[in-house]
Amino acid sequence: MNFKIAAAALLLSGAAIAPAFAAPRLIPDRDAMGVYQVTQPGKPTQTWRVRYQASSRMLRAVSLSGQATGVTVLLDLAAGSADIVVPQMHAIVAVPGLSGVIHKALDQNGAHFTRLGEATIAGHQCTRYLILKRKGDGSACITRSGIVLAATGKDSKGSAQVTALQIAEAPQPPEDFQLPQGYSNINLPPQMLAQLLGG
Image (cartoon, rainbow, N blue to C red; front, side, top):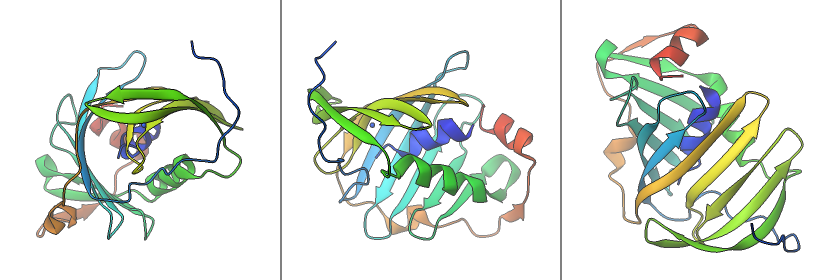
C-alpha cells in the first residue's frame, strides 16, 4: 500500500545509457493537475486524480476507481504530514508513516540519474531517466517543470508503475487542499488501512 501511494504522489514520473546527469527536479515548480493510472503485479489497476499547489507544497490525490474510489489522500510536503479522508466513514485517518515514504521517494541523496532521452506522454514532453538507489531502482519521465509523467519502481516491498493519462498546468483552488469540517479523527491498523486503499 505505501509503495502504491508513494508512486501516485510522485506524480506531479532499449536506449543506450548515456553519462550520468544532475538530478532532475522532482517537485513541480507550478500548480498542476493530473490523472494517473497505477498498476502493480497481481492487483487491480487504479486511477487517481492528483492536484498539486506549489505555494503550499500540498498534494491531493483522489481515487477514481476500484475499492478505494472516493478516498482522498492529502500530503503536506512542507510539514511532513499525511491524512486520508474516507467519505464513506465520514472520517479522517492520520498516517505518519506515509509522509516518510514520500520523503524517501523524493530524496535524491545517493540516487544515480542517467538520462535516456526524450518522450511525449499525455501530450507533454519529458526527459526519461534511469534511477538507481541502494534500496531500489526504477525509471521516470519528468518535464522541465518537475511533473512526473511516467514512473516505474521496485524495492523489497514490490513494484509499481504510474502513467499520466491527462496533465494540466493551471492554478489549483486552495480549498481543495483543506481537510473537511465535521469529520471524525480515527486510527486504523495498517492492515485495515491497506485494505481500504485497495492494497
